[in-house]
Length: 114
Image 1 (cartoon, rainbow, N blue to C red):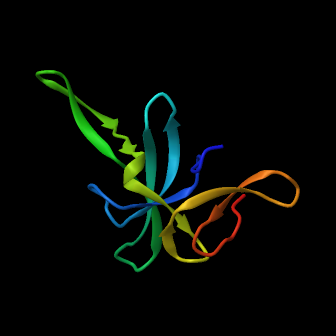
Image 2 (cartoon, helix red, strand yellow):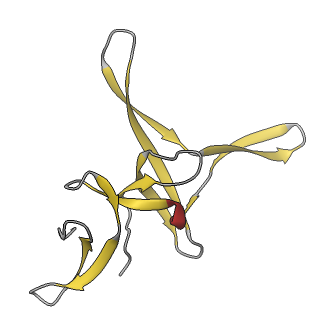
């Protein structure tokens, strides 16, 4: 059982986006990298809130005159699970519940995740 899964909210603890909360968009199992998607609420000039999706894009050179933008992954050691109850980045544990199923839980508050 994986401790973090697709569409879990994570808190970035190191790197370019340190301090931001993201959702895991894609997990590469052959390596230890995760692709994340940033969703930020931004107010425009009229004062209306919009949700904007920002990706971790990096320019890569295909040829000396041609560049492409490619999504760059984040290493799994640079993120922690974001607990909605604690409102903090937390460690995730795995335990067996009353129905003999393995479940993930928050190590600070003890709440089970789905």
